Image (cartoon, one colour):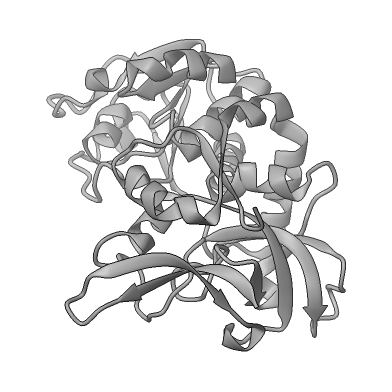
Length: 327
């Protein structure tokens, strides 16, 4: 028997979450069984735990869209008992039971070896949010980051925090956008040299082009803010778009793309090819300073997760929440 956070839905459609004991026989099919050590709390986890269940289609369900741990048993020749592994994406924690459990059974195709230089706790301090941030930075690099500050929207969140730290470590001037003035010191500690109030970018777009300001952008918000930012990008600069917290709509015109050659790069962390996942994790181990990483972390245990799921949907979670599933 082992512990897991189980989400159930009653006949009225109301969800509830509680720590329960289950067995290996309860786990879904997969060719690798992992003794989970750490998971994280992401926006999708809040949707899975919260009222109505959000992304979940079948109950009971175990959320947790990522995890790191040690292989316990494997029918996949790439992994053997004792190997340290990390998993992000592949609808784990949504369509397939996830990381809020002391054991998980998954396809070996979804895993990557834990890169040298990271332990399992550090890997989940990075987690899906940090992995996504690295994919976003890599995409900017592939298209060429222009001179001038790189903007990071939603900077106090998981993706934004890691993107800020990575970009600053790589030597870029980082302008961090936040709607919470109390996070300014935190963001400066991650390496941001400029703090931008969210209100400055939340106005409805009135002109498709404004003064050229940003040499690149990691956008974790979307919606009106993304539309405003597009008109402020330098010629040929790129925006890596990773989030929809501000909505899926884009009230923009084609003018920034036609007249300034702006690149809008969509980042999907869910079904990345193995080579991309491995490259991103190796870059994380190399280019994310561990002291900055530690400053982002707040610890949690399984019993904290129902409340944390609600808090992250309200925008009340700062940085990275690392869940010790065995505590």
